[in-house]
Length: 322
Image (cartoon, rainbow, N blue to C red):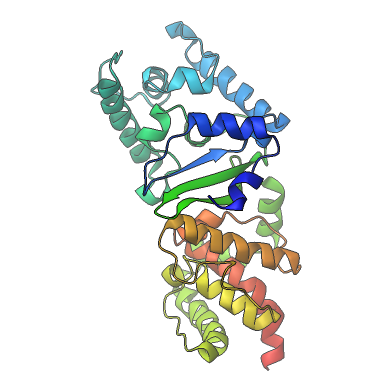
């Protein structure tokens, strides 16, 4: 067990309780909200807003939700909610008594959600298992996504973020990655980006110029990581594990990166996430990153997010190359 796991919690009681409750098979991983974030006032406000929204929506069905973790895992409330908001008729039983039936029901429901929201599998921040096991983080992401789609005027508190810890059971023991994750949009950062962010414009209105911008970034990156014998051809995939981004930052900022601080050949998404988080921390500490970035977007190959991060380096060092 690495030291980061013990340091992830401020109170031994919280750590011991968590270890008693979580069982992770070898090769598997689980991401949870840290106990230190469980009493976050903005998180409690968001939970209250979502519970009120569900109860108001399902008032005619005489359904009352008191706990997001305890009342949504079996699919009954989600089933009624989708039928009410989306006028969907799902081919599942209203009540699923066994875990197998609940799993089957959730599978149908979550497939319907993904289809309605037009989300690819890589974009989903929830799955059948996480909802069925009463995972609060997944449940919140799911409900926020449903609310934004079917009731966009619902006033949810902005900038709700939580500290998370991803625990992976490897052959060498438990590995952990700490991160900060947004559940609702960071409106301040979104407004700042919209005022001076050409990337939304580029992707939505000038896709024909996208290749030219990518070429400029690739030339910039290869000019520096090429000294290390590396060559980047694909922005959307080669930055996902964080390795090239870390090496690029090291070259430009003059950092000595100890190989013990990151994974040179990451073997899992947890290790990739660790690398990306480290890179974002370095950029933030160096004053180069002044907006929020979801590290999972980079790991998942989101090109717009990756290009925004690269621009932080490009805008500082391009003038030094001319």
